Image (cartoon, rainbow, N blue to C red; front, side, top):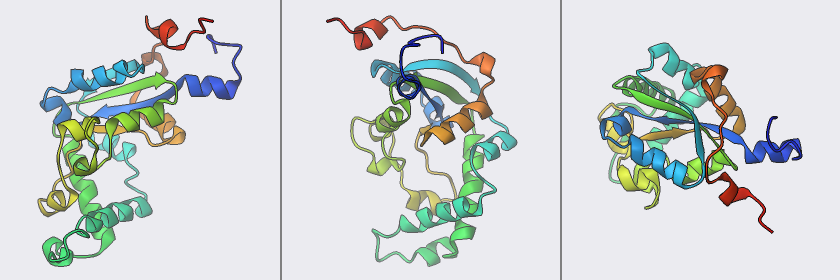
Length: 212
């Protein structure tokens, strides 16, 4: 703890919270790297690590809890729920099954192929309540539900119903950790400690210093 040593440890962790972000292949291929990073930085968040790579099959499977049957089953449930708004469509007939485990496995394999379809940009982002802040900036994980003004709401439109029928992953540009445990795990998977940098932004004093 080299800065703000006077702060209570819990408050320090809030002020300098770190989260993991990933610009997916569709974001990179569409030339949205600068726009997305600009939105994060404009909000006062700081990129403290960044790299571009095409992830290996092993890396993607470590990133997503592919071996967690409950998680895979939830993927399948989400896939089926995408048809809830369309009572005239028989999801079982369209997908060939209503087994959520099977659907989830198919979604997972499509997701892994999608994540390897081109380069991604992995980042560690730091700032006050960074985890919640980044997810707010990103918008709903389903692009068609994401609010205008968010990254997904402004730059993507896709539906799990269409994606599942087409046997592909939903294209939603961006990944952001959901909670501190997930953030810590994902950061350690994608970055060595030596690849994460500590530095000050020029606007830190403007945004956070006490001037009275």
